[in-house]
Image (tube, rainbow, N blue to C red; front, side, top):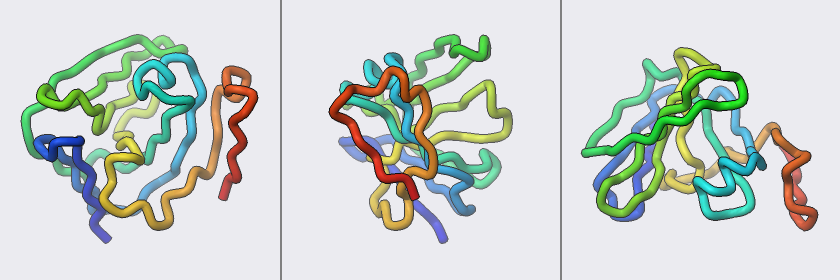
Length: 125
C-alpha cells in the first residue's frame, strides 16, 4: 500500500511504498516547538521505501541521543513533512498530519511523557 504525504501547499511530498514500522507520539519540548502544538506524531518507514518530490529546506538539530535530526520542510509554506533521525539509521519519519489518509496510523507508543501537558491523554493502539 502506498501512502502519500504532503505539505500545506502541496509543493513538498513523500510517498511511502512499504508498511509503517511504528507510529510514535512525542511530547518533547522540541517537537512542541516544531509543530506549534502539544506534541508531534512521527510515522516511521524504511528510508529505502520512501520517495520524495519537491523543493525542501532543512533544519538540523542535535537530539538527546547526541545524534543529528535533519528536518525537511517546504520553503513556501513552512510545513515539516519528514525528517531523518540519526539515532535510527535507515529510517525516515513522516509527520502524521501530512498524510492524505491516516487510516491505521494511530500511535503505538508515546515518548517524553514527562514533558506532556497535563491535559493530554492518548489512547495507544
